[in-house]
Length: 248
Image (cartoon, rainbow, N blue to C red; front, side):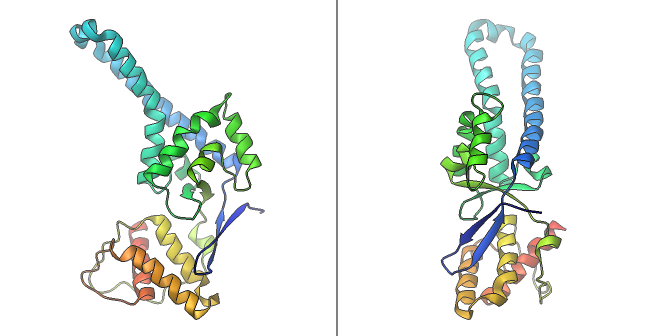
């Protein structure tokens, strides 16, 4: 199957290939998300209507202002939905998780709050003039399948490749000793560790050492190791094993 790919060249000379999400899967994910958002919006409106009789006195005095606040809150639900899920669930909304899609930054790192906010605020441009027409045109025209919000935020939507499709690497170590806490390490960062070990045999020794050091330095402060000290590659391998045990 032909797939659109996005290549990232790291400073250490390691090339990372990300599989871009296609238009079809993005549409299906958007439909699922729209259904979830619709249910939430309906629930909020229904709750407000149901509560109205008990708030007669307040509504009488500030009915117009309350109406404006309610409409503003309901209108902001899609923004809250996408930003919260993308920031807290590794770039995945409910629809994206169902289709195995993920939002990442163009450097391959996880999407953060600021990038998610930008891409979703500009979603209103992608929606114009209706049915995501501008967004669809941008995805088709962009070399990296990016809608306008992605271009502004520096983000991509990628397809997660199942481990059984992607891996030829098997860790040589087993989990032993004190239990580590790697909960602050994201799934995307764990996938980067796996990708490093898959490509490591083909790397120049100095490149391999430099890339392992960079990955380890980025993660050491966020992993509770109970004082256990390991070299960079040993540390990365145990972090991956800890995350994989949690995901199973």
